[in-house]
Image 1 (tube, rainbow, N blue to C red):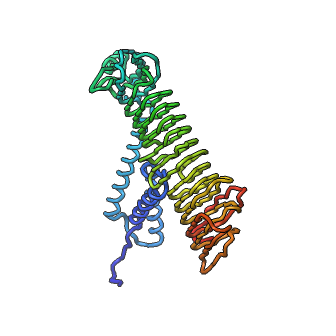
Image 2 (spheres, rainbow, N blue to C red):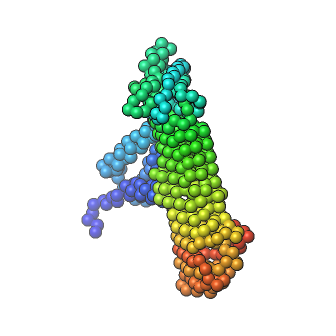
Image 3 (cartoon, rainbow, N blue to C red):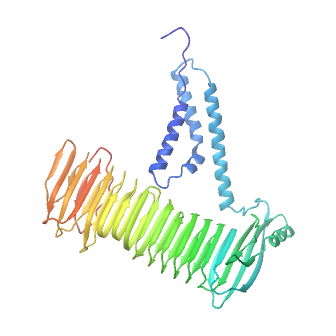
Length: 456
């Protein structure tokens, strides 16, 4: 009702901010590997640009519109302060962990010092290494001696001050509570001291290494290993016993392990030739590469759950794709990834959302039940013509293609097919929404092509 007073429509900036926040949360939940924190820290000024464009449009489309309201001013202040805080936080984190700061201001110089120590290691006593900023390499040696060599990089304004900091961060080795404890930089290490420790001890010694920042290495170890780093690369080669690794941010590589391998965290993970079971848990890695795992593996990463009884070939997981070859009894549950499975044996169970699924069994393999459920993507399955199966397939908003050997019923944009082929056999259960189902030639791997929502 027009009462003679000018009416000012509220700005759209507030709703735009809410929509943007909602979209970020949606992307974080649906796209594995999406870093909402980093995205906001880099692109929050785009909100100010959008706000300026909205106000410019309002100025020309609504003559007489006023300036900024009190609520808009408050919201702008909150956005600017929050955005600057995010950017500063990200810059500080990168400066602190990844730059050349090494725990001191960049205008200070870096000085290098060396130290060494050795002692007689009691038989059977485990070794515990604890440090802050320290890279540690375990080197197997004969005998019962434990020897340590440190190369320290110290940040300071003068060499005399750097020497004082080095002296305060002296290498310590002693028996404590049943462990032989090694502290590369003493009990109270300075952040301005970065240590590289080479630790020589018998390979049959159970060892635990815990550092906050640094790379860890071990090769040919014949006793249990536990390696923990909050930020750094961890590399283990030819361990002869079980390995437990915890890495918050970094690359983890394990080659030719004789025992089990358990990895918690890590950005990029590669495990090859492990004879024991491999477990990846409580992690959201950007890349996972596995190969030749006769005891199989299990993976829990965000909304992804995968188990495999045995892996004769390879398995690769990235942000938007999953590729596996030579897997036996593979179970996959994930979101937003295109999935290609080649040469599978035994049973296969896949559940995906917003991704295409393609699968082809190994020639002559004994096959178990197959269940593929998808939403927003196509399903392509190859099957030997000489192997019978019991089909139960349905595509809502899509179609069923290929020679399945059973009739396909189509009604109101939905397709279904059920029946026996080749005298029956294992159950092949296929379901998709807004996608198609097709049977490919057995001598060619199925191709992957995501179907647009609402189309076949």
